[in-house]
Image 1: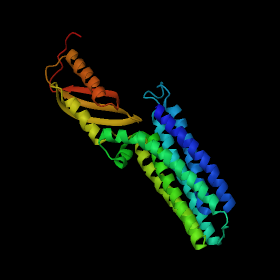
Image 2 (image 1 turned 180 degrees about the horizontal axis):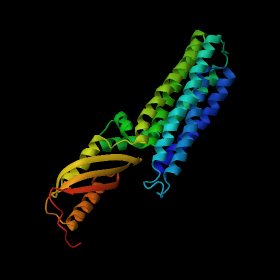
Image 3 (image 1 turned 90 degrees about the vertical axis):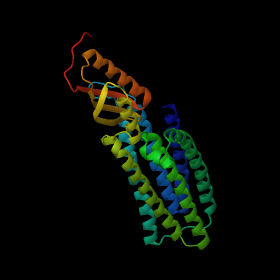
Image 4 (image 1 turned 90 degrees about the horizontal axis):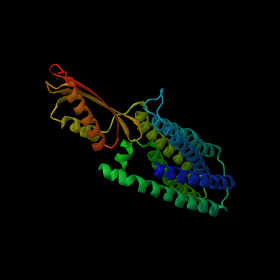
Length: 311
């Protein structure tokens, strides 16, 4: 959790500082691409604030109305952040570029140095934030035996995923703006700058839609990845007393926290005490062997009658 908090705060500080610089440079020069990147950074800054809020809200303890806790707050606010990327960033960026093209607005040529300075600083700052997010994410991906893209798709940690997506988009967006500004300076035509602004908008739409798609499943109740389901199933079937797993259901109730519900068929002749023992053993082993297991509910059945014994 401490690593997530630092990642979010660093991303927040980086995006806030460069949003101001990009906004100033864009307003002074009239560069559509730089103004689009300013909107991009404002959207990212707002989203980092929402993610930081979600960390606090998600830590609240279970209560009568929320017996499984508030872990899904993290999913909810990441979903809101994905919509914020599209609404606050993509719409403005695309509309700004399109308006400038249609209106035929001109931009000054004598202040390209300011654009390059601000975009250069932004590229360095965004790259540093991206590297930090990668250092936090890559070891987790290796542990799961997955590539970065596959891990980011499957990860139930919406905070790190959102920061990673946004940092990748931020670096690409700055490079797009660089290309648009340079082409404008080289050709003397503001069209490339305006096209670059629209391209930033398209990039943000893609990122926002991707985050929305990945987070929506967690909000509505996504199951564990197939490899974890296989490990859970193997851990249950590994007991001699278990003759079959009739039904297995899993659902994320928070980042990295699974609810496991299983209906299992047990051997004939087991008394109540034996059923309780095997159930407790399975519960403990599931938590030990699959780190993400948080809640376990077992529904044991018998092929024959339960033998009532002393507890």
